[in-house]
Image (tube, rainbow, N blue to C red; front, side):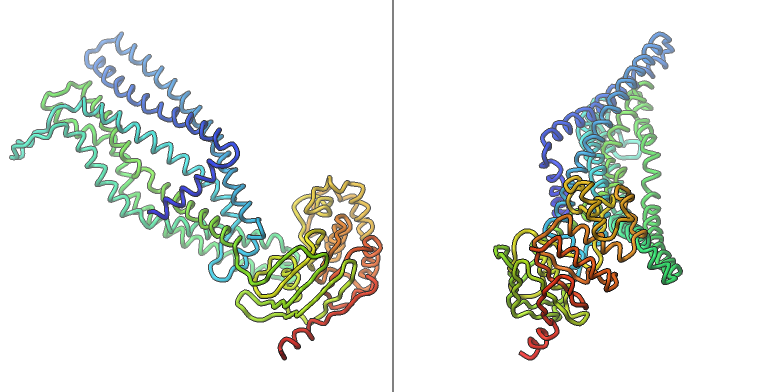
Length: 565
């Protein structure tokens, strides 16, 4: 229970502490006040019920018409109150969802926490995109809905109990069953006892719902992810003829989803077998409970209907836990998932590493660098490596020895290993074999991660022409279609990005592997002409002769020397 409370408090704190949080609290106050207006409307309806049915009992035509008019006014004003409260609540909902979403995205992206979370050893956060996009929405909506409902019910409870206490002043005599006892205000005690027993039964029947809801969200996200991943790899699947394998995966993921769904609906059936009859009898039971007072002559017919209405209000107010149990179970599961995601992201920001990093040097200096896999297997040792500004260095070595991992270590986010990495703070660009293409136009892909306006349309078109993508100029303002770009075109696009940013330091990992030797030479020569002062650290199987003079470092020898030592 304490853990659950902590999860809710942490998430709510994010909502109220963001810029504009004070205005949101004021808006929440207005929404609460409007919501509490329903309590006043309900009390007025209880009073109206007594007056209306008394007029009917007396067959008083003018009084009946007057009460119909009063009813119309109450309903009209209450409807206006409800609509305004709902409108303002939805404004608050999107503002708090925005605050939660921004916090989640910040934690996920800061210091490459997303990478550490995806590559964590042991427990990993599944489907982080779903946690951010879906759980932030579900939590804010569920929390506001249930909190406002609870507040109105708690406040309303005092009003309704006071009304019922005053109306049910007569006692219940047990003498007809041979017990000489009278229970004063028995209808008040009956309401509390009835709901208490019902709440215990509801909890016992519905307790398994929370883990089932959490598992259902997980299975739904897995199914969506499998289809989205296939969508981004149509060419590869088509060439491999892998449609049957993909269909098997989809069926397996959906089968897992459906299996958990069946467990969930069976549990909901068990819970509903109690809550559904409860919900549909809660408005009739009060009449049965009040009948002894009517039969004994303590109340007239109008008073009986008024008493029944007051008892119903008390019971339904107390039954918030029963009516909301399913939604509460879903909300608790959502809060647990979202809080777990954020706490995990915070923890990844403090991922320990024995690799000492600094950015005070004017060159690149690696000292005693020992790279390992996440499960501590040895990859690569570099006793010492120094790269001067403007120099070109070729790092060669067999596949699988850790060359790509070395680039991640220099970039600053590979935590597994020991040693020192000292490099210039700014002016770096890292180019993997397949560069990332953001959502957006071709021009935005060239400028990434800067806005395209910072580079300029004319400059972007010039860079595309220089790297051999002149045939794509007409598409520069159109959305990038990854499937429409060949591997070579994607690599040329990455070099256009390189020219656009003109960094002082570049590290390339098989960045020209999709180009033939002639195309590679032409492209690298053009890049070196445009960036004569840039240092190039090239990881490739072919020597980067087109970049001019270069120094060769054989990583296989470094590895063998370290093994011998």
